[in-house]
Structures are given as C-alpha cells and as structure tokens.
Length: 82
Image (cartoon, rainbow, N blue to C red; front, top):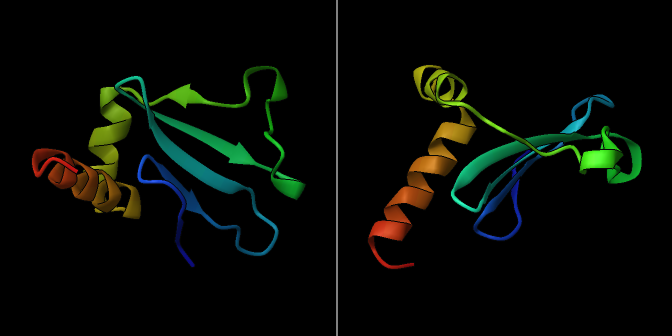
C-alpha cells in the first residue's frame, strides 16, 4: 500500500486507477504532486510539484495521515543526524 523511495520522497500508490500521490522535501519545502497513468505528472509544465502551506501541513497532522507520520519520521532522523 505504501512505498517509500528515497528518504526525502513519499509515494502513496494508486487505488482503483486514482492518481499516485507523491510528497517530497525539497529545498526546505514540503511539496506535493499527483501522477497519472504511467507515472506522468498531471501538470507536466511544472512537473506538478507545489509547495504545501502551513495549513496543509497542519491538516495532515490533525488527521494523523501517513504524510504526517512520514514527516515525523524524517524530522526524527534529521535530529539524529541521518
């Protein structure tokens, strides 16, 4: 169900043909994009990445999503030097 690629990238696979969602930490920002068929960006002109704002991130933590857990894991490994 859940697939982590590099440490700074989280990929949430598709269910029933829905887009694949990816989250990454890039230049100090948390970014999101959706990938359609053949893992092509839905917005190819920008590669589809958009920065999450504070309210987006707060919502993930409030809902205790897998994204929030991934961010907590990343923050913990950064504190430990990894």
